[in-house]
Image (cartoon, rainbow, N blue to C red; front, side, top):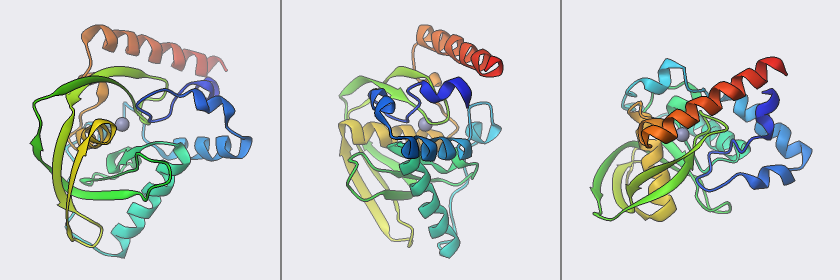
Length: 200
Ligand code: ZN
């Protein structure tokens, strides 16, 4: 990953400064996880994902693996298309010590009127952070890894993460949701990062 390892490439929605205090082992784990995560440019990220219909050991293994990758990559959310699987499911964890939550076949049930502009990054677009306006309060319904109904009502960062991950299931990325100017600047940064990488 060359030069990109020093960029704030965490799927964090704030900033990536803690990156620089990572011990070598955590850094190596994160780089290994980043290698498994699909980057923008891969068609799977632009595909509307398929609903999950089998709730078996294979699905639970897929979810466990995604949770580990998200943890190692130091992300707060990860959607199945980001690991190359066209499934309507995502995992997330906003607080570092809370359990990882998996939501399968999520549907947006309700959004509040209030919206907020916030900075978002994406594990599939490392090195980029842009402002995205989203509803502050949402409610979603879906099922868990056993096929049991789950309903999540969330605000603030949690609501933002949920909406970001649900976008991935419809092939939508943060660059589609930001201003034209920020999108242009982000594309320029991506080109520079790529160039730096080929020179490294
Ligand atoms: Zn993302």
